[in-house]
Image (tube, rainbow, N blue to C red; front, side):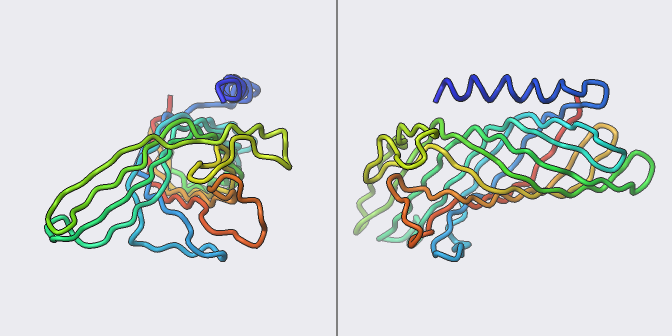
Length: 230
């Protein structure tokens, strides 16, 4: 995994500098509303939404006055929660899974003027992510007696070049690699970028799960971010 990060990070900056005179960078951070699909057709339960975060850099390679290519390098939280009852109840249970990924999106963005230096933009593209850390937590009460536990997420030691085999798979172990599609829309000024983004995961989360008959449990992330042009 460390080797993959060492490859991805230089590649991001190489791409960013490929058209230096028409390229800028954005320091971006914000709020993630993460969830996981629960049915084969991708439906989610809104009650399972988990609040998390993202922070990182997004490049802006201008291809024309109205179009740009935006590679990114983000640290982003995903996952979901389940809850039964309230903390004040005699019986209560809450479980959260919050995996943290390094994510590399590549987004093609169209821009249109609003007034002066202010522009509206919208775009879409693919993303690739690798899990680096995360926690599974449970807490609750049973007949008034409180309990809690916390455990680091276990990742499979998958080699992405071996497409037909997942190394380190097992029950309760999460696939290390995630991929999918992302969409974005927002407003940018001379110095600030405000955006709403959506990540549609296409990779199953459970390790060892490669059957096309079961497409449950894929990441869904809605985020609201602010960026500062560097």
